[in-house]
Amino acid sequence: MEIQGTIHSLLPEVNGQGRNGNTWRKREFILETEGQYPKKICMSVWGEKIDQFPLRQGARVQVAIDLESREYNGRWYTEVKAWKVAPAGGAEAGVADPMPDYSQPFDPGTPDDLPF
Image (cartoon, rainbow, N blue to C red; front, side):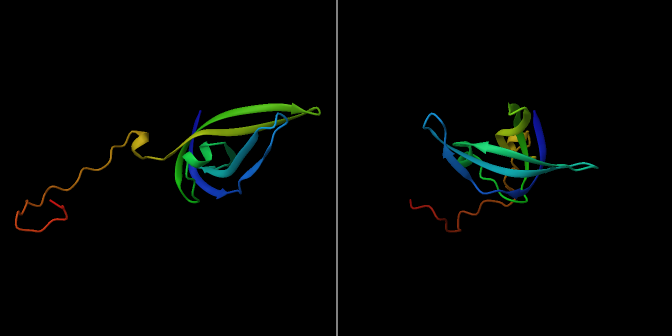
């Protein structure tokens, strides 16, 4: 499932150690959806994906998510896990980078930065 929106806020990174002795890292962020009735959704990024997706407040992003619920003491808790974060409308969303401007003619008399 994918959701598009703006990063409203970033929460501090949390880390710890599981029962099996392995360490874990988690970073949560709040995504505000677009549309007539925008919603704020708390999402989490786990492990090495924290470093893969440089999140910044105010960025428009498209987030691929997994939903997971688990039961604890008779209550159910749901988590929204982000497994891919990409700039909204960027190259990964199917929009190509703009072409360079070649409208100016080449002038061989101008110096360049090439070392040879």
